[in-house]
Image (cartoon, rainbow over all chains, first blue to last red; front, side):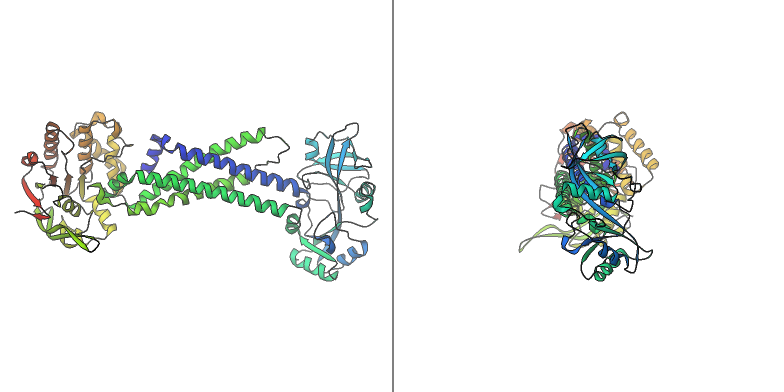
Length: 365
Length: 223
């Protein structure tokens, strides 16, 4: 390993090409991951924040919150299912809003709720709302009155909550009647009667498994409902599943290219070092030791690329416009870094066969 | 005990259906403090003999013993360990590791054999002093002159306290004066250490530096 390290230290220029290519790939990888996280977190916050175990939709809604309607009698049947500890209604209206006296239209998700999600207080007084931080970033302040929807229904922001946006729109958390009023006045064609919610959230009794309870609820309602666990509800949001698949594929391809870069570079380096390796083998260096040196160099070059690429990504994140939802999470940085290091190591291992085949006798011929 | 015993050693290469005999029933004994020149033209089999003696090639037939080690019975892993500890090589093209200093080119031999760093370092310093290279110890191999590189290569061959040093065409890339200096140095370094050496060359002017000369022609050792 000391041989490999000395070469890295004394001939850094030799590894510059591979290091630069890997740095660019790390930047791409982190930006793709940041975009995926930004899109995912910005779309799913209001659902992820829920404490409920099961989300119950009307069967005809095909797991869409805005299409779903749960009437009070259906909710009563849900509440009678064995294993249900408590329920709460939820409704969402996606609308435009303006701060009173301002013409800029903000996208908001007016969310009527009964069960307080994680980080959100109990429902506020009628006509008031807790606003998501995304709206604060748009210039909304506590005490501002938002005029919501085409009917310009006034809602006063009393405080802010974090990570609760819905489909890239800042949530306005309101009590159910305020949501119904806004929904009915803004969308008369989709008006909601008293007691009706779009989704019923179910908290399971201790020890009851969410998936099992969801099946039990759908059975008890005779197929009138479609019940999902929280994770399933998150993935059922429009575009989330497709978005995850596309970005995961892009990240996979980028990692593959990183592995290819390491494999090709160190295959060429190994070819160039044939005479040197033959000499070292003649002096008693086992092939495994030489191959480990190559893997070590690949991992160190990749580590440098991760550090440099991370710094470049961090700098880019500062200048990327807010409209681009890039959110590089620490967990993403750690995962991507580990994957790049592992990929670089595996890529370098491609040279193992070539190293094993170098004949030490060629050192003397 | 002889440093090298070769009995009926044969090496055959196959090229399609043809057999090429590179070494044909070679018998050779080299004493434990003896320096032998192996003289022969290109393609005579001298490099093959050297490679078999050094555990770089395995013979098709015959028996090879270095010190008390029967080399011809060893598997590739054991041959690697044998080369780490019991033979030293001086290659024709020197083959120093270019990104290591003169001293590190010596200590790398000890590192490969897993010897203690301090012991290896002290031995390298001692050898460099003997070779008149103490002042160049910290210079990279690429910063050394041809003669200095050759001297480092000789030091490297002695680093594992071998029973046998195998020297391949040490003067081929040097002018006569430099070649004689290198042969003189080789003789001085090897004689008196209880080390045997086989020096392969096709240069008849260098044979008088060794104790005796063995000729090889078409894979056969001449009496």
